[in-house]
Image: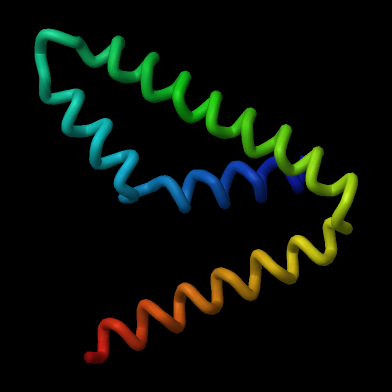
Length: 90
């Protein structure tokens, strides 16, 4: 159960305030669509994207160990963070 809470919290925090949420808020302002329609469509899109990530992760780990993927992902996040900090200071 703890792992599920960590996964939920990680995805939830990553999604709050990102461009997907902002786009969804923009779509919700269109009264002709309706809030329920926006919610259903956006939820389905997130579920589909998550399904692709899960299937891809399962496939990739057949060839590359999960520990190697975690190190590569961590290094990638650090590099993006450093690039962002360097870009912001110019």
